[in-house]
Amino acid sequence: MASSRPYRTHPDAETLDLAFVQDFLPRYLDAWNQRTPESLLALADPQVLWEDPSIRPGGRAEGHEAVRAWLQGFWATFPDMTFDHLDEGSPASAALSLDAKTLIALWRCEGTWSGALEPPGFRPNGRRVRLVGVDLYGFRGGRLISVRTVVDSQDALIQLGLLPSPESRWLRGIARIQRALRRGGSPG
Image (cartoon, rainbow, N blue to C red; front, side, top):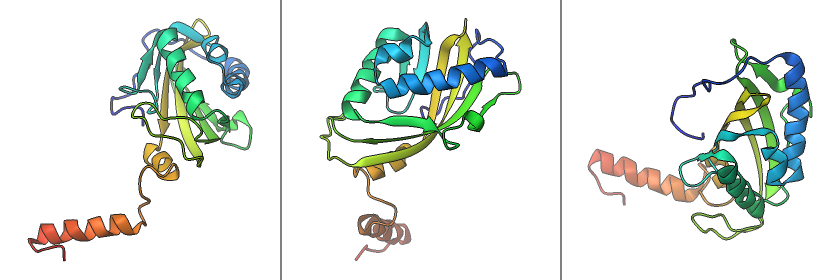
């Protein structure tokens, strides 16, 4: 998840309609798949607040310059990353909040870790990652004013080989040690 902060609709978010959503979603996915910051920034308000767990530091980028820097680093790390709607290429997996001020879109992505992961400086290993996530969008003047991405970061790190899988021998060993220490015994 991008952060543990509660989600709040941006105070300037406008009410959306179905026609706008149906027009926006294909343009947004196309912009991601062009892999150029300017493609996405053309859809965003200059004061956009973008929250995503891959943004370092802190999971937040505010304004075009900060978002541009994050996107450049993201695509340097995953240069072949592609995005699509979760529902087999259809925007049917999107919805509007009850007040029609937040667009909720489910997506999937896939790509290869080909560039350094900065920070903290992990070097690429060529592994592929496949993720499913949810974005929450707010709009002002027809442009993105807020984006919050929710994705399973732990799953991404496991797929990239940066965390052990829950079934790994290493984690089972750690669990044995923890249980022994809780009982007051020795792990051996």
